[in-house]
Length: 290
Image (tube, rainbow, N blue to C red):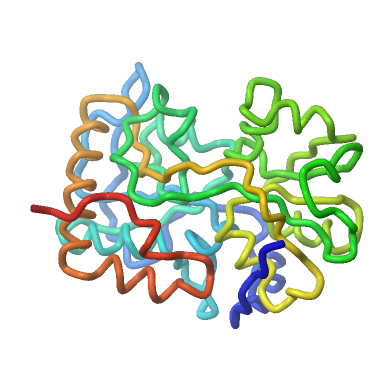
């Protein structure tokens, strides 16, 4: 089994879950009064005035979460903020309920979805940037469970986040549908903090989740949890915009900014900052700007 690395920021999650258990849609950090993009009747924003509203799951570390200082932070959010600084846009992080993301994007209440957002299986639904980060979906079990591989999950209760990449893999039409069908139950939940609490308490047998999110949530409980060696999948993250002309234009612009940030060394710097949470520059796949 893979040994998760020890983290120093685990303790804030339990507190933040109590304080911020219900995602809100209000901007809270360094945001001007400029309105969000305006939606069209057909869906999707029809204009962009420079207020870059980033839709994200506030319980999805290390990509987006509530930091020790009470502010929204994370690898993807810091990338988004760096893009806004480069463009002169207003950076507006907006925590959302993950299963409401499409409605918020298509109504123009958020500009994009930027939160460890898997491209595979969603290509026709959004205007994506090119992939910028490779990721893998893994399964976490209790160390004393006796489960050492996928075969041991037969007849077990497994939990995933609703509308997540892990859920898509394990559900009826997914590439791991046969494995999912072997479970006693495939449960869905709103966020992974609660999923790991359920796993620790024994109310579920396993959690299917992104590797960096697993590392973060395991924290210093490496004697309690274990990550199975075999991964469910390898996939890629992108920034998702509404599938409109404007969305495609913004995706292209943001992609160029990410390439420039990589050439300037900012991407490597952020990867190193979040390295103890499972983020690695070795997994960055977007080419540098020429």
